Length: 69
Image 1 (cartoon, rainbow, N blue to C red):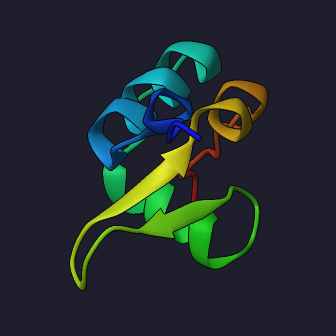
Image 2 (image 1 turned 180 degrees about the vertical axis):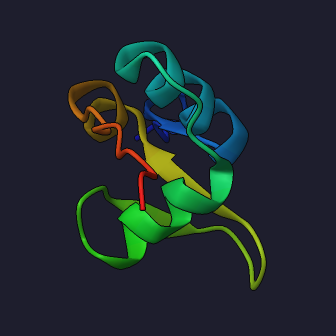
């Protein structure tokens, strides 16, 4: 059985895909927040590194929020 690491991407690549799909900048920190809230799947590689499910990332669109106050 082969591993499917092509189906999992790092936070920087996930942020890049989300930015392209959403039309505005999305940070790797926000990708981590989406993972913690259960919106995208992730797997821990070690105590510091996580990979994110490419399928979840490609289906998700981050809405833009205005900062008018």
